Length: 331
Image 1 (tube, rainbow, N blue to C red):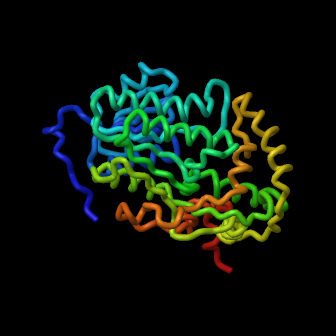
Image 2: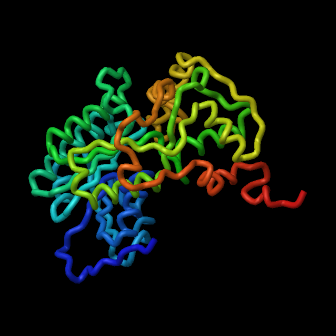
């Protein structure tokens, strides 16, 4: 389709603001908005990590803004002069002053308060499937529940998007499995691997945000975003092995043992390293993560979900024996 061009000469210095722009999902949202001709302010704590987003649009179309969700004045400064706000900020694990409560729940509250204070009309909040589970014992999920509650309480016209596990170049699902399969003698699973997941392409999440912003009727609505197919985690492992053309046994490990391993693995975050898995992530993989029947979904936003099989060859082939181009070698 043809990307609409925007006449910036008539703009009054207003733009759409994306918090968490340096992240995996946030970056996809910035690119989706830029393709539609929007002026975009890409807000993140470390703007040097988002320099690549400047090329997502024309010169000056994407502006980098430094913002820290722990400081109200920082958020207010970023929100001022915007016409719509997208909150895609989040952390996969806790480290130092970056805590679930302060970033997910506290940050969401401050953003909603600022949106209301400056009289903006739209706020899109990126949450996750399962964020309505108020009885969850998982600290990550509890913070997501609290974030949704804070957003709705602070700005009742918010739109909430709950993606399932997000995949694409740079993801933490298929890349992690492929890296393990390339080095380890087996591919580990949490438990028996029967929990269900509905991976959604990161580009589709970006498109969903752009579609929601273009439709005022999506205010006060919740959308659950999933791909076209539901897999078990064992099927995800099998799919990964097929894509990288490796044959490795898939071994289920007891969830309690994996949680203990995840707890100790997370301690390396204290010295600035990325833990391979955390106890909270292990617990999440013990439960289904799929779009509920009857929920508003990507189709409700006019988006046909992208199959994982169509995207995985674009970035997993580097894990093949012999490297990226080995599958093209003559027999």
